[in-house]
Amino acid sequence: MKKLIQNILAITITAICVSTLSTTSVDAQTAAFKPKDVQLYNTIAHMDSVMFNAFNSRNLEVMKTLFTPDVEFYNDGKGVTGYDATMAGFKGIFENKQAADLRRDLVKESLEVYPMPGYGAIEMGTHIFTHTENGHKITGTMKFVHLWQLKDGQWKVARVVSVGH
Image (cartoon, rainbow, N blue to C red):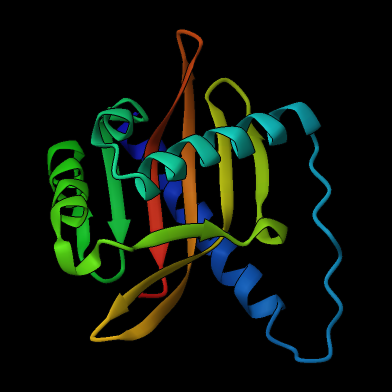
């Protein structure tokens, strides 16, 4: 099973790289994403909003319910973390007075959702994090992949790939 997840992650990271390379032309027109399953797309878009409404309102208790106990969070700036370290990271962000206005906003037109039969869904997109530091607005734009698992009727993130830090 671990090998399967590693293979899925490798394929997903490759897809991000190919997607990034294919959109680098300044003159290229990109077609709007058309989901294979509109209901799934809407469900995952809703779950994304639940997660980041909790993030933006600093609600750690809700955040804890949105990740599987065996979550793996891959971050090109900080490495790989599991559930406990990921939750500790969120807690640290939420308690940091210097980042009190930190928020995440999805670039809505970047959202892509793909069904993953027998498991859940793959969500890919771009999000913007903003906060004020020393009186200056700081903005960071990053790409992400969330591997959502549907288990016992509940959607939870099992794997995160966050790049562009």
